[in-house]
Length: 84
Image 1 (cartoon, one colour):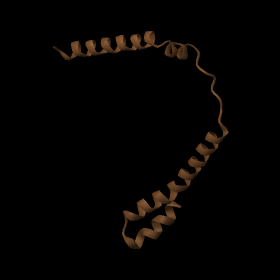
Image 2: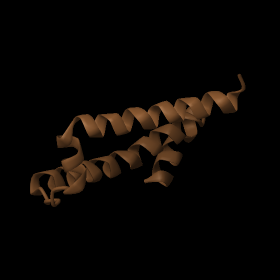
Image 3: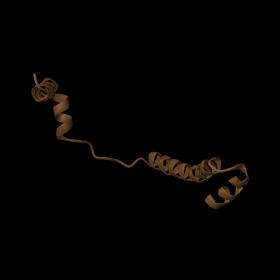
Image 4: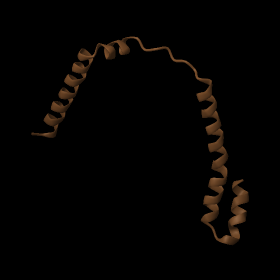
Protein backbone atom coordinates (compact mmCIF):
# COMPACT_ATOMS: atom_id res chain seq x y z
CA UNK A 1 0.00 0.00 0.00
CA UNK A 2 1.16 3.44 -0.75
CA UNK A 3 1.13 6.33 1.62
CA UNK A 4 -1.65 7.96 -0.36
CA UNK A 5 -3.93 4.93 0.09
CA UNK A 6 -3.15 4.72 3.81
CA UNK A 7 -3.88 8.40 4.28
CA UNK A 8 -7.17 8.12 2.39
CA UNK A 9 -8.21 5.09 4.44
CA UNK A 10 -7.32 6.83 7.70
CA UNK A 11 -9.24 9.99 6.83
CA UNK A 12 -12.26 7.95 5.76
CA UNK A 13 -12.23 6.02 9.03
CA UNK A 14 -11.93 9.27 10.99
CA UNK A 15 -14.89 10.80 9.15
CA UNK A 16 -17.00 7.70 9.78
CA UNK A 17 -16.17 7.78 13.50
CA UNK A 18 -17.03 11.47 13.75
CA UNK A 19 -20.39 11.03 12.05
CA UNK A 20 -21.10 7.98 14.19
CA UNK A 21 -20.33 9.91 17.37
CA UNK A 22 -22.70 12.72 16.38
CA UNK A 23 -25.48 10.30 15.50
CA UNK A 24 -25.02 8.24 18.66
CA UNK A 25 -25.05 11.19 21.07
CA UNK A 26 -27.74 13.81 20.36
CA UNK A 27 -26.28 16.10 23.07
CA UNK A 28 -23.16 16.62 20.93
CA UNK A 29 -25.30 17.48 17.92
CA UNK A 30 -27.33 19.99 19.95
CA UNK A 31 -24.25 21.60 21.43
CA UNK A 32 -22.92 22.34 17.96
CA UNK A 33 -26.26 23.70 16.77
CA UNK A 34 -26.63 26.39 19.46
CA UNK A 35 -23.36 27.59 21.05
CA UNK A 36 -23.73 29.60 24.25
CA UNK A 37 -23.14 33.32 24.16
CA UNK A 38 -19.68 34.37 25.34
CA UNK A 39 -19.43 36.39 28.54
CA UNK A 40 -16.57 38.54 29.76
CA UNK A 41 -15.16 37.49 33.12
CA UNK A 42 -13.60 40.47 34.90
CA UNK A 43 -11.36 38.28 37.04
CA UNK A 44 -9.86 36.53 34.00
CA UNK A 45 -9.29 39.82 32.23
CA UNK A 46 -7.62 41.34 35.30
CA UNK A 47 -5.34 38.35 35.71
CA UNK A 48 -4.30 38.41 32.04
CA UNK A 49 -3.42 42.11 32.27
CA UNK A 50 -1.50 41.55 35.52
CA UNK A 51 0.42 38.62 34.04
CA UNK A 52 1.24 40.67 30.94
CA UNK A 53 2.65 43.51 33.05
CA UNK A 54 4.72 41.06 35.11
CA UNK A 55 6.19 39.49 31.97
CA UNK A 56 7.05 42.89 30.52
CA UNK A 57 8.70 43.94 33.78
CA UNK A 58 10.77 40.74 33.82
CA UNK A 59 11.89 41.09 30.20
CA UNK A 60 14.18 44.11 30.62
CA UNK A 61 16.32 42.69 33.47
CA UNK A 62 16.29 39.31 31.76
CA UNK A 63 17.72 40.71 28.55
CA UNK A 64 20.19 42.85 30.48
CA UNK A 65 21.56 39.90 32.44
CA UNK A 66 21.71 37.75 29.31
CA UNK A 67 23.76 40.29 27.38
CA UNK A 68 25.94 41.06 30.42
CA UNK A 69 26.77 37.37 30.65
CA UNK A 70 28.14 37.36 27.11
CA UNK A 71 30.75 40.06 27.68
CA UNK A 72 33.82 40.24 29.87
CA UNK A 73 33.27 41.09 33.56
CA UNK A 74 34.76 44.57 33.25
CA UNK A 75 32.24 45.48 30.51
CA UNK A 76 29.18 43.92 32.20
CA UNK A 77 28.07 47.08 34.01
CA UNK A 78 28.30 49.06 30.78
CA UNK A 79 26.07 46.53 29.01
CA UNK A 80 23.55 46.53 31.89
CA UNK A 81 23.28 50.31 31.74
CA UNK A 82 22.83 50.28 27.97
CA UNK A 83 19.99 47.77 28.13
CA UNK A 84 18.20 49.67 30.88
